[in-house]
Length: 323
Ligand code: ADP
Image 1: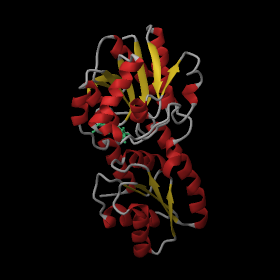
Image 2 (image 1 turned 90 degrees about the horizontal axis):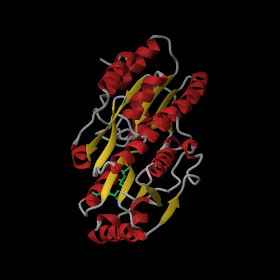
Image 3 (image 1 turned 180 degrees about the horizontal axis):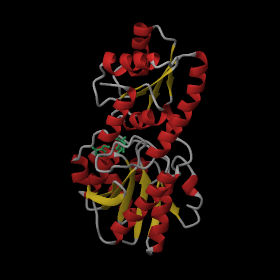
Image 4 (image 1 turned 30 degrees about the horizontal axis):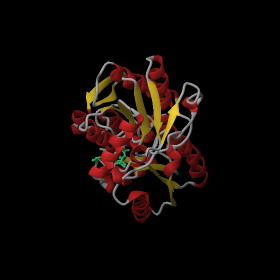
């Protein structure tokens, strides 16, 4: 491997920059040149690139977002789009590609591998919803950002004796909601993985909390829960007449300087991606299995399934008093 391309794709996540920096510095250390492809597959199709040097990735570890920009590309899903992407790689003399993103990004890499390119995926998403990896870059920062906002909300909810319904990110997965819910000591946590039983999962925890003397309540709802936070607030209001307020945290959860955990995960994963390529491996996803760094075949990785962490789920149910 003489020259590799690196890009970020799909939803951005804090720590993507640290991963880019790590890929570039590791590559240079191994005598490999590195080219940044901007705007994900869109840039690959259009030849939108920037040469990356030791200096150009300096100071990137602490920066949120992605210096290579991220985009979604419908064109890439067509045969013509893919042909143009391969042509760009040939033109730039890229022997291999490292893509940082989610499952969609990995599916794209798989199609390029089928055209003979060497490819490696790095899991980057705040949702932690990549099946093959117990951890994804950005998750810890997103949870901490959400937690900080929720702690602030709690102060004002307490003063006014209100019921707060906070919607956190997670269209398909409740990892952020569950983790943040446990961390903030929520009254109740609702996730898309479980059909919501309003009486058991919501009203009863609120009642127990009231009976224990509380006059303010914190309900954490994942984005993907049916009806979202507004529906949950409506149900609470109808059943209890509590003064209920909805806060949707939204994209703030995607920003900010990455935490230690995300910087380290991103840096190790970047290193692993280049190491695999240097060893002649291809079509792999770098992943974490607990505290260990591992790798899987992309096709195999895309077939894997991951549910909520059962231990955390059990703890949440115990602490919110859900039967
Ligand atoms: P994520 O990588 O975060 O899951 P997306 O699902 O939006 O984000 O995927 C990012 C990009 O990957 C898409 O815009 C598209 O260009 C490419 N992609 C997604 N799915 C496929 C697929 N099945 N085949 C080829 N390319 C795909």
